[in-house]
Length: 350
Image 1 (spheres, rainbow, N blue to C red):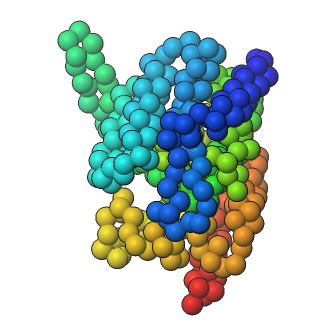
Image 2 (image 1 turned 45 degrees about the horizontal axis):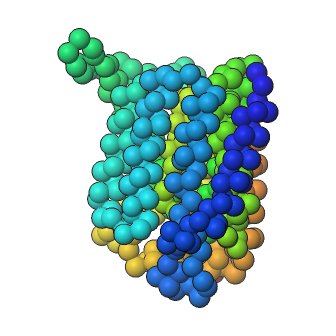
Image 3 (image 1 turned 90 degrees about the vertical axis):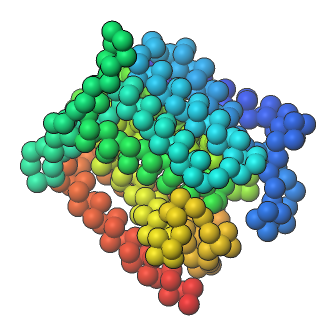
């Protein structure tokens, strides 16, 4: 299958559209509010996520035949981007944003996007398709796999919020999406998986992210916003499911940000906060998110970016060669490194 045209189209359209946005967004008043976060710089175009979604929709309609899953992805991602775009402008209640995320995940499930089995690293499979119920709509019906749906819901919410919380340094979300999309592309073209359509979709996502990364990388000329970070999160979550349920591969690529997300959730619950609601600890950057703690450790923004890129790249490449058991131990390694890194950063803070 020819992958060159989708790749070059995604990259070129993103670069061209972003160049136009740099001129048009300020005239439309689409600028960020740096004073809100204590930043001493001029406002810059924001958010770029709506632009990336439009490019993705256009390329998807050009290069793919419409299927239920694809239509569900376009509709669900559009809803997520729209609400996030509004939130980027007027700050919607966290409970509303979470509710929309759950709705979007449910749309994915109804569209048939889900994980039916999980490979057991010690042999065999864990079946998630044993219990199901049917939704009837006149002469048509939709089968929902209960355990599969619950797992898919949790997975999508985890990755969407992981990518959103990662967006504390410009260039981090777009860079990680490029690495993730490219890894899933290479995984999908292997003889073991052999999914050319998934490979094409992953490559389009990767090249859109790369095209935007050139403008988003620190110091940024344009910001991706929640609309872009959540959109990329949804795409990576769904791509991991499309590519044969390669959840472990996606976990390896996003291992450190996922561990950071889990830490943030536990931290907020421990401090009697709702997990989906950021508090003062988040706003003044006091040792909550991994990238913020790395900054407090004394690293520059670019050093933090390349450190996380490198870790994601190493574990992403390893995912292409490791078997199920190898991926399991690699995930354990990520957990161990994250724990040690967290302890070191906390000692430095004190």
